Length: 78
Image 1: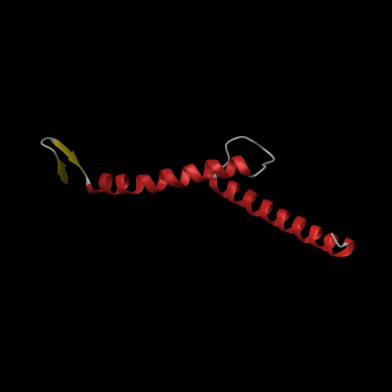
Image 2 (image 1 turned 135 degrees about the vertical axis):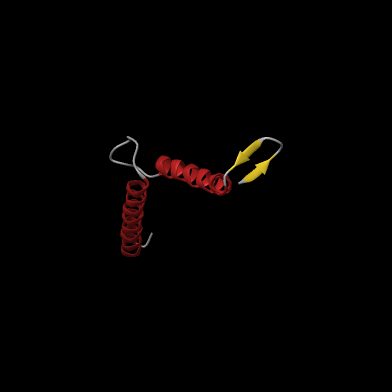
């Protein structure tokens, strides 16, 4: 056990959890931002896998749109 101060005792597991906590908060914050950017079919709470899958699908759709616009630009010389 790790002792902090005079009478508070914290197990080693809690100490590692506190070190990991800022990283977890950062990831959760970035997931919230992704949910704002990526249009989703449903707006209910989605798990991490669903958010990342929707993000990947959205990126593929955007890449396809860019490719189409480039070809149209080449055809019409814009």
